[in-house]
Image 1 (spheres, rainbow, N blue to C red):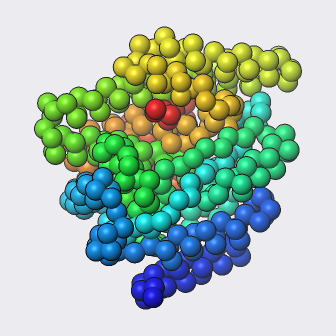
Image 2: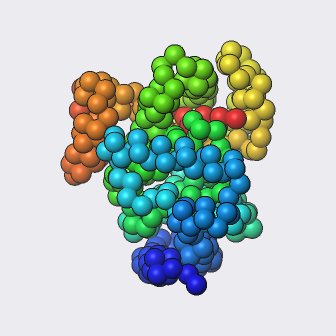
Length: 371
């Protein structure tokens, strides 16, 4: 018989769904809220405490070992000031659905489609729990003449409203990725600024990357092979992001050029995006072959580039703010919380906090689609 906590969580999810359905943007794709909300309820209803899954021997030895890493990461997160609560202390042992994100953007301008929801505010993507619905949404949006990008997502966060469960596939990830993802999602649960998804995702990406590296150094030592391997990966991601940032800026300038017509813009855009594998191969990455193979997957368009910008915008400003706090992550997060609740645009407030003119172009990044 399901435990009272599981029943209450499922009912809470149903109530949250009803709230979202009553106030959500009318521009969502047909049937979105009802179908995806039911999957959300099913996920929370089917979860159980990790200890119960262990007692019932529902996990294999590799998953058991990964759970020990999860415990370590959660303890580290709590120590650094993230709100862990009971998050990631339950698991849905039979969950076999992938999570998908779908985004859309104007084909000759970086103007992404946005949807409005309570709690999170305006978001530049929709999440799905089944590929059929995600593909139907992509088809619907493409039919409106938009660039569309559909991708899988490794995890998600209920932003502190409900307790996030572990999903089985997460226990198969490398330790660095698992730590980064958990710390990223716990950052969302600790601080979320309504109406600024880009700021929230950029902040969580920065904390996830910085904290996961510190976690590895604390666990294995700064001179360990685990840390060296992650440093190589970080160098690859930074170089790749810089290349994508350059591509974004070239396209942005192209779209804003009033002397060029739509057909010419589309032609030049196609040429620039087709050159991405070649540009990637010239970066001299530690994992060059893996990145080239990754960049060849799927379709490159404005929607895909905008997603990268969303997740890593103004990382240099976050780094400067952390340096002001002498590397103290807890004090840094306190500063970011104050910035997020200052009542002004959080990027403007962040820029002023580090002594940068907020009217200049921010040093946006681009999320590396790491192999």
